[in-house]
Image (tube, rainbow, N blue to C red; front, top):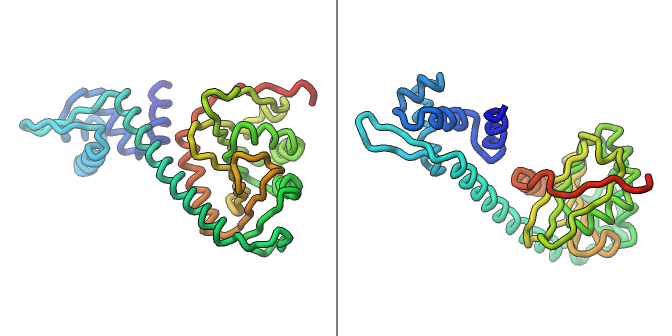
Length: 274
């Protein structure tokens, strides 16, 4: 059971199944030649040497100069630390790219009028007073998935305003993945209804970063980006777009953040009154 969980963690942190197989096999052997590793892992020797080279590049395996050449793995603790640091760097780079991209969109779309509401438009700027209503409509029309990154304060207001729509979406089988960006000194207690809290389709994780981004992705087809991540949902305009390139960039940023976000760190309690 522990090994299965370790395999899942290592693959989530970026290793391929072959890399995990060779690394864990080498952990069991402690130090061995490529031939021995291939036999132990039941893999072709050529494939094993290719994977060992990849693991060396990641600093997870050390090459021992001997006859024959042998390989030694770093400890599992060091391996996890290296992979987590690598993921954090990847997230940081994606956050920087996303910040630059958002600045470009804000600049290029500064002349968009708030009244533009055509559904066939690729970029629509929603005024503050219409945000909650538009978000409710989007959730009602969502069929498969809703991915979002938001601040803790914004999430509390979000769930307060659209809890009913979220419950109905969960009943339809919509999968929710929410990442909460919170600082260490913020009270992590949040309230959701029991039906939401106990639903396996409702997943919460958290990150702690200075880059405050607020966004949502509906059915992996449309994105909603808050102009100001620090303001309440009804106090700042949002940009909605079905532009495929933008959706792909935002979805990629979310997936990277989801992989490194922490689980089970927010205190989720049911609302007193449902």
